[in-house]
Amino acid sequence: MTALEKAFADAAAAGITQQKIDIGGLSVNVARFGNGPPLLLLHGWPEFWLVWRPLMLRLGDCFELIAPDLRGCGDTGKPTPTPDASATAERHALDMFAVMDALGHDRFGVIGGDLGAYVMQAMSHREPRRLTGTLYLCTPYPGLGQRYGGPGHLIEVWYQYFQQLPWAAQLVGSSRESCRLYFRHFLDHWSGDNPAVFGELLEAYVDSFMKPGNIQGGFDWYLSSAPNRRLWLEGKLPAQPRIEVPSRFLWGRRDPLISPEWSDRLGDYWREPSIRFVDTGHYVHAEAPGIVAEEARGFFGRLENGERGL
Image (cartoon, rainbow, N blue to C red):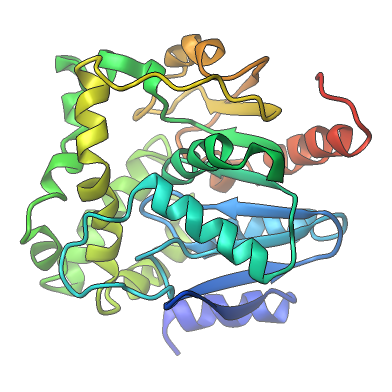
């Protein structure tokens, strides 16, 4: 049994199920657990649904947790075997609305960070009435501005350019050792250089990324988002209305990728955002699932009771 098969077996023993949902030719793998109001969980890069297992087990007594593998990731289908520049945040948003339609959920809450946070913003602009609330974790957003590409930060974002190269996925996946070395860097470094966070699951992540198309499937996000990222860094990204969906933010004080100080412009993009800083790196949900569960219970519970404020 591989490390990934064991992780899936452990999740299944705890009651987490997986199913494939077809949404217009794309087979989306979805993990589900619990009962109650629906919460959609959107992973970042380099993640897949398994990153949510600790949070799902903490919230299953009061929510239905729905954790898909995003387009190109995990066991969701790969639309093309070659680099695909169509995997934009808007495309992912349409995928997720289609998944929730298939599951019969018209309104639902969303939790996510990193790539998932981009998708949440696209969903909030496209169909805000469908979202009861959004809980963001270490969030990239246009207010980061030119700071995100500043000289002192280039050492943290080099991968976003490397992964647009047509041979990058082939190089990273040329051996299991090269795959492990590459992804261990991001899993450990973004966790505040704490290898214990993903240590037990590292081989499961390597198993997942060594599946055909999975490295390129994740890299496709960076290829697809490159035009908007350039406009963002140049200060030319067209402005959008502030998001009206009730939104709560958790931000790691030790996040090396998205500095907590860069949350200073959230109010320009969301109406009445509220924020809590926590002692984690980038992966708040993996490093402190208990805190995320506590916030989710309080935030979405208040929204269920008709209370917008925090």
